[in-house]
Image (cartoon, rainbow, N blue to C red; front, side):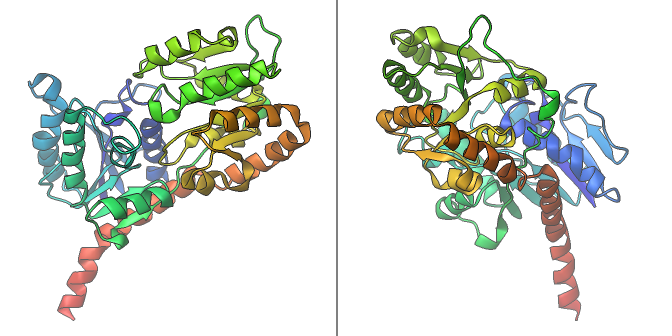
Length: 391
């Protein structure tokens, strides 16, 4: 097979996001699992540290002179042309964007299309439970979803997201496949020295995510403040994307609380430091209001760190019985859970022991293998139909 892969998400600005890491893991594993196939990556190389197997080729998408809309026009004009020139058996687009400055799902391709739609949060959360996205983003996202509905397969990352897709989009159930993400975060723990707060002796609770409202960081900080007033001795360390929106509002709310001196925001961590920060935490808290999968708490489980998570269908699907669940809309419930776990060593030990075993069931190798099976089913379907017609 000749497989095309939209690798624009591996650009420096997005390579280390969740969707960027998803794409990088697949690109690193698929050519190894299928050495007889040929893979053509469309986009800009992520850097010299990314080694390409012999059956992988980079192809640059033309940088058309349309300013901020160059990515859009490149995918609508140049990418279909390249797919025809390269005689692709299929093209895989690994994410669906909401911003018009980012590449769209391409149209009028000469080959079958596979799209990974990680979730429908812009539709199912924002505008219903959360503040609506700007109208331009809503329109662009809806336009992209129209293209997704015409794909030969839609991959998503959880059964929870799959059910949302079947409910919200006009797509047949047999064309939507749930393939869990993998995690390879905690297995080298013995080589990582646990991180300590600079100049501080106190233990810390860890959060990983962003300032985005659905991540519920403001409510978590308020709950932490209540727990500190009740005698909690921990600090709260938050790993966040410094460039993400809503940071100013979250920080302003945090600064007015009495616990402000125990709040620490981190960003831009290299892989080794990130693992060390996870390993040094007393527990990890993930009070999300909406999620497609939820990789950060699974990373914490892999590190043997006890996890407090929102009581949502998707978090229970991924974390199983290895987490302590709370009502993410209740500041009181979150605060009480922080106090309960920090004061109960036996419960923390029980969760810490269960974590790595649960995380071991999520491997990128399995994600890549099942993705390759999707490719096969798409490419072989027309052949099977043709054979049936002849007989």
